[in-house]
Every structure is written in C-alpha cells, then in structure tokens.
Image 1 (cartoon, rainbow, N blue to C red):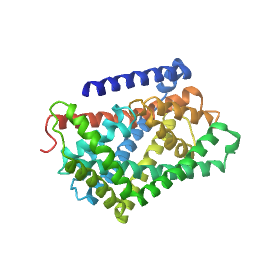
Image 2: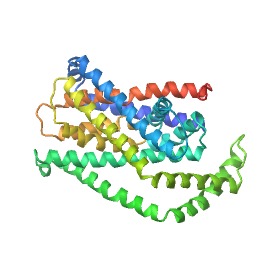
Image 3: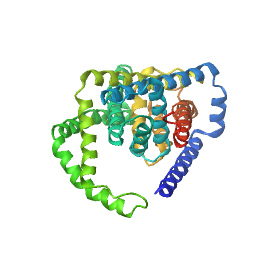
Image 4: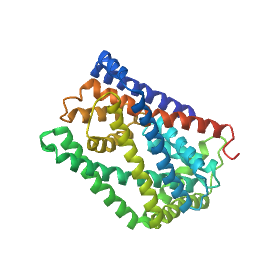
Length: 345
C-alpha cells in the first residue's frame, strides 16, 4: 500500500512538473526570469510573514476545534500539527481529500485523541475554511464589479457564476446532510463495516476488527462532528481564524505583485485566491500546477494592461512559493519528527 501511495505521489509531481513547464513556456522563460529579477526583497519578506500569520490563524482554528472535542494541545503544538497537515496535503494527490487521513494520524500521535476524533477535527476545520473563502470571494467580486463590468469578461463571469453556485449548493447539501445525519450514519456503518473487515483480512499484520469496534469508531466520528456543530462560540472563533488566514493569503498575492513593481486592486486577490484554491482537488499533489494555472488564467482575464503573461506568472511564483513551499518544509520537519517517535516528548 505504501509503495502504491509513493507511486501515485511521484506521478502527481511529474504531472505538476509538466504543467509548470507549459506555464513557464506560455509566459516566456526569458521575460519571466527578467521579471523575477526585479523583485524587491522587502515585499517578498512580507509575503513570507503573512504566510506565517496565515498558518498561525488556521492553527488557531484547529486548536479551537480540538478544544471543543476535549483534546488539549498548546498553540505551538497546534501550529506544528497544522504545518504537518499542510505537508500531507501538499504531497498527496487530491489535496486535502488525500491528506486528511495522514493529518488525523498526526493529530492522534501528537495528542491523546482517538483517530476518529482527530479525523473529525481536521475534516471540520477544512469544512469551516470553505465558508469564509466563498464569502470573501463574493465580496471581492461585488467590489470589483463596481469598477469593471464583469459581464464583458467571459472568464471572470464564469468564475463568479462558479462561486455563486458553490455558495448555494454546498451549504444546501450540508444542511440536508445534517438534518439526516443519523440516517447517514447508519448507512455509513452498513457500507464500511464489511469493506473494512474485507480489507483487513488481506492486509498483512493487520488484525481483523470486530463489527462492534468498527461501529464504535464510526459512531465516535459522527458524535465528534455533532459536538463541533452544536458549539456556536467555538464555531465563531474557528471561522474568525479561518477568515483571517484567507485574508493573509489574499494579501500575500497582492504583495507579490508589489514585489515586482505592479499595482493591482486588493479586490482582485480577494476574488481569484479562493477560486484558485478550488483547483486543489486535482490529482496533482496539493494542487501544484493546477492552482497556479487557474490563478494565471483569472489574472490575465482582469482588464489591467500592466498584468502581462510574465507579470502574472512571476507574481504567482512568488505567492505560491511562499504558501506552498513554506508550510511544506515546516511540515516535512514535523512529519520527520513524528516518524522518529518525538511527537510525545
């Protein structure tokens, strides 16, 4: 199983490399290098700083959710746990969907939480992060629409339609699922118990779990989700941390343009960053290549003469270089520490 995961990750990074080659070719390698050489150190340093603030804000959201579930962790530990979560998201295909099981294992190793509680915590944080992103994107689109007619630009109009659709569909589905959560829980138990037992029979050195044990763990996951959903104060704090984190990402993109001497409205970053994050569900590790491509397409759709191909790609290189590689490097160190047995020291 580990060999198959490694193969999938290697293929994912190979795909991301191909996408980056095409993206750099599209921008013009010489023009891209010339633009990047003009980058000023101070704004680039600020991009790194707001990236750290983003990580801290979302770490606060994770700590808040863990507190609701009765899992006590310090803020520094929550920060490094979240960095490890970002590492697992960034090196596994399908982004958060592929990294959540690994993140749940990391939380359980770094605390006294059971695995299903840890999985419920990180799943809840990822879900809560969706709400501010769509809200801020709608605000950015509304503000930008006062300056430019969105209807005259097909790409921006389609992006706005996608955001509005997500803002309607996802909460509606979530509401229906919550209202029918007990029926959904019964169906999940019925579907997964035979599957898990079958896989365990053929997996080497893995004991076959009992039906009662599997049901207890699945029920524990749903009970943890319910505790989070019924804590208004905790939800408000977690959503606040998430919103601050999203704003830091948007500020990071805006500063990336400033670093290469280009002024763009902050409302543009508010619109394109959340939409670009949707590309994180691609099979590429952490959405690498996919997110950058979507961001470039959206930025070039903006009627700003100063935002050329090389400028857009250069700004994205600085921005994604911070928000992708900084947490990946920090989280890689965390995962190495955990693998060496230092998580409980």
